[in-house]
Image (cartoon, rainbow over all chains, first blue to last red; front, side, top):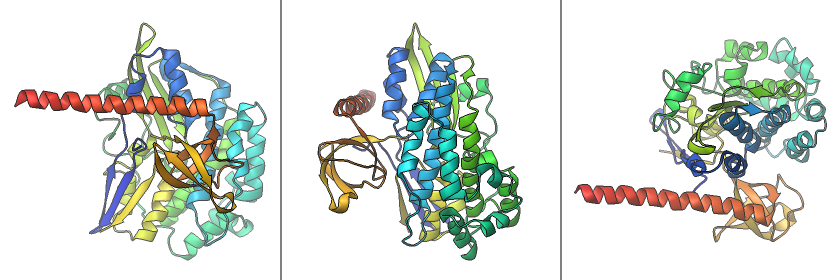
Length: 327
Length: 89
């Protein structure tokens, strides 16, 4: 089945061309269904980030998401960040991180057990080598790299030693906070969800969220907004999720629009219901911003070779399969 | 976006680290690195060549039916466009 879609990324002549085969109109399956039924179907269809989709759908259809739901969203974000490290960060043949505990995080939160403590323990042992709050309070990356010998620390040291810290550095164009009325109007425009722009192509995700954190800002100041800044932003975001899980809060607002922060960036659902039935439904996923033909990935990949391009693509983190072609 | 497609496990590979699944009748090799205890006949959600988790046969069937509904709708929409183009000629 070709439903999953994929990105085709072509490198050549100092530029990168990105063609998306992703279906941006799957949400039309919701049209004509009762709101409750649509709610049940969406997470089944988008099972990868099912909890984020469930929360966004609940906000768009009913204007509310519970504490328990928002806690699941944060646990799922942590799982996705950790899986990206497992699958995308490579150090020779070294096995990256134990995966069983990663895959269990969302279930721990669903049972109502302490997912924040489970994540904090995992991060201390395997990822950060110290308590998450201690990592977040570190003055500079060099201090952490000196003190920690986890797999991610070794990977970052390798990036630095290989002179790849500034790989794919671009001038940042982060997605600003999106005003509800304007966003809803744009989402009504056909094609916006497949190729979104907000005063040009924009970036969403860990670096956009965490660029002001001292650890990330320090790397950006020294090496630019490139590979290392993206990797560190993911670690900072991950450490911050311990608190996000612990202090999750219910969200309530007018229905119509649901915006949820996921590991890869903003996930946006827009819904219109008539007499309890879905009359219109649009989903805008973070990959559409970050892998826009003129977006951050395309700009960062311009001029890179195959191996470096793969590192950078993994750092930007598409939510679908990609095929890298070198002209 | 973020789709994970259910597939039936046909065969478990050496050392249980990989499996052959049947996706819409097409066989494909996937990694079992992220799941434990998968057996032939189980349905798993597949994403980017990895099995993410095991789902029940019923759940898999419901998801596949939804995906088939989308594909039928997409063909209908293309058909309508084709007919409109024909009519305009």
